[in-house]
Length: 93
Image (tube, rainbow, N blue to C red; front, side, top):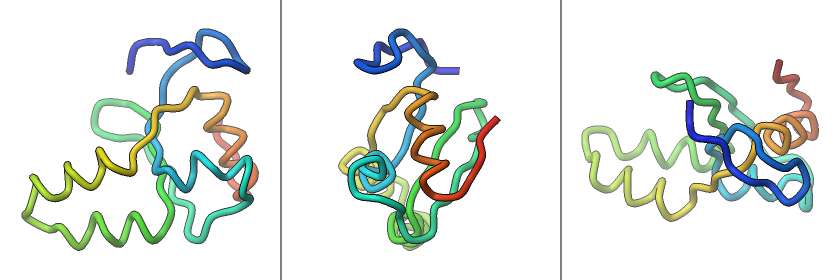
């Protein structure tokens, strides 16, 4: 699990990783192809369909995939993650 982060709305909370489009869902509305999952380290992550397709396109090119993820990735708190998921019709426990 990531270390706790400080959220302006929710205070100290667990960090989650999302693409910039999911992070903006509270402002911009649902994304196309919302995909939430728990990674191999037990962290919640989510990305939109376009970012997911791009990540898949980097098969075998870890450097390009990591560069893309660093460019579009955002760290948000678990409660913000749940709110973004709910906007996309997904309930996160």
